Image (cartoon, rainbow, N blue to C red; front, side, top):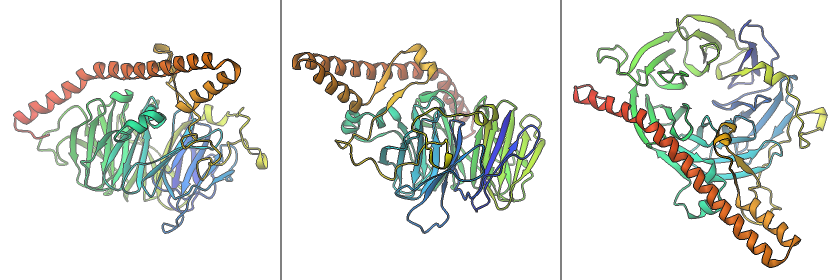
Length: 450
């Protein structure tokens, strides 16, 4: 059974409803979240960034457990954080700062593992790829950038690379408002929305634009159909437009090329969208303070939830069985005031680390589906260096040097295997992308622009 979670930009708390029955669950207090500032961490607890004063030079990130309405953990980052994202297992929380920096924290300890300058202006949205290997960010500067976590945690690679990002998509001319990603990891498509009234479809494997769709109004929210046939675009005119990903609409469409239909019931701008794949439902939030649940097949409204007050700007769909039965077993969990949640996030990287990159003390493992086909974990250089020091203390210097060379060789092999894995999926996905490009080219030759 799923629950719907919604927050507002004013201090109206977080609403939570049973998606099937419509019954309201706990209302979580004291939350004023920015767009994309609400996240469920590993389906274990809720986290939200807070921007109560737009002119303030500091912000906060708050945690709520599922069983208590009060805030349980407060963190105070070094600058205001707008979007938040967490990987699927809830190992990491990533935040986008108003300066354009991105911060990555380890949830269990609260340590700040990484910070890097990602954009020239404030970060507006963050999303992980379905396999958690990539992080995609959007900004007020109009750019969409793709970051590989392998590179972010690779000390040597960071030093040798001209830039950290895998792709830099800069075709948007105004602020990026939302980003969604499909299935396929580094071979997925992503869709970005912007205040320039366009949504753009990108290929991660090709690193290029596949489709540009112009809408009648600014799009602030998008949701992708699980089959990746269409995507939904929530606009400031109160409509939810349905746009085709792999087919063209006729040039006589009243909405424009590739826009095949629309849903209309909100009285004000549509600010956020979410898709429940298990029930084939589309959920929309609006400045009118309502959350509407749409049957994606019939386009009928299945249910309506009313937020306490103010506009709705974030919606999540979370499986209840996982979140409400959570009992953490980490010794790093906070025990203050009886809280079972992790500790607060560090404001800065740990200054007691021995070297400049010693804040990287993490192991990045591929998802379980990837481990079955490739039994490799990618270790940061700091972890390897610690292992070498232990070996040097245990044995002779000659034996330690031999072991050092072996570890370096293993690291290089692991890196090559990761690249081979990415290449394999690129080849598998190439046929689908080529067919889409060929179809668009055929449309151009017939007089229909893409």
